[in-house]
Amino acid sequence: MKTIACIAALALGALAAVPAFAEGPHLLMAPAPGHRLDDESLQRGARDFANYCQGCHSAKYMRYNRLTDIGLTEDDIKGNLIFGDAKIGDTMEVAMPAADAKAWFGNPPPDLSVEARVRGTAWLYNYLIGFYRDPKSATGWNNLVFPNVGMPHVLAELQGPRKLVETEYEDQQQAMGAAIAAKTLVGVEPAAGGKWKVLSLSNESPGSMSQVAFESTAADIVNYLDYIAEPSKNHRIRIGIIVLLFLGVLFVVAYALKHEYWRDVH
Ligand code: HEC
Image (cartoon, rainbow, N blue to C red):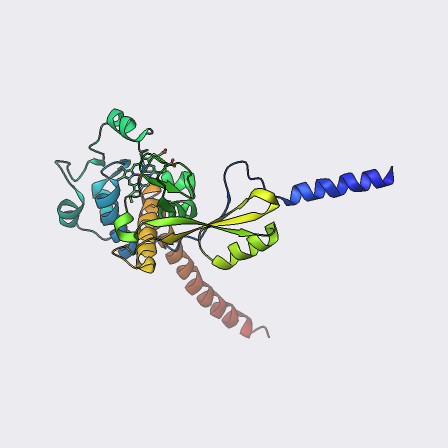
């Protein structure tokens, strides 16, 4: 009886140690390198979002003139970020009707105003660097983070097309070791015959940017998406820093005063 209980406990333990793979590979994501108080990064993100994303995606809870928050003037915004006949006080709409978009892509491109709050910045960053060529998909592209996604790799020219590379390892431990050592976005999943494989991406040909420059462009876009999901947060953080500095100065003054009062007592 004891032995049976022991075996059952061991088997349960082994099951618990294996992560769930029901929804595609287990992903090891790279952290998003952006910083939300970096106005220059946010301005580059705003420019790239207008050029590469807004043809399909709206950000309809965000008004153009709010971008004066991140150090742009109204003329910068009118000249570089507004295409078509939108006004400076308008929200960021998209020209493509939702019905057409659904017919073309299967799923309509969602509004991205609060996307960063839904997915988080790490997910978004890895999604933007996670596209690879897949001849079996309708767009010719697939994504390691969002399998069978309906969006094409719109930044392919900058990054250069990438392909999926599968490397097999004898067991899960070896595969996880290799995945951690890669220090970038990779997936780990079971392979045939009890083996394990690591899924990684490698360039088929170079893009117009180096990989490092491309990753920083992706980080700028994610930084901008994080900002538009909660624009007033930057203001709150700045006020918070000023309040802490003020309290720091007040502490020094209060401490000196305390010293002065107690000098007569001691
Ligand atoms: C050619 C049109 C097109 C362009 C341009 C485009 N997208 Fe998309 N995007 C889509 C479609 C279609 C989907 C929906 C895919 C699906 O659900 O399968 C999508 C989905 C997404 C999602 C996932 C949404 C979710 O949570 O399900 C994100 C994030 C995203 N796009 C970001 C971007 C960013 C950032 C850019 C600019 C760099 C961009 N997209 C440019 C068509 C586009």
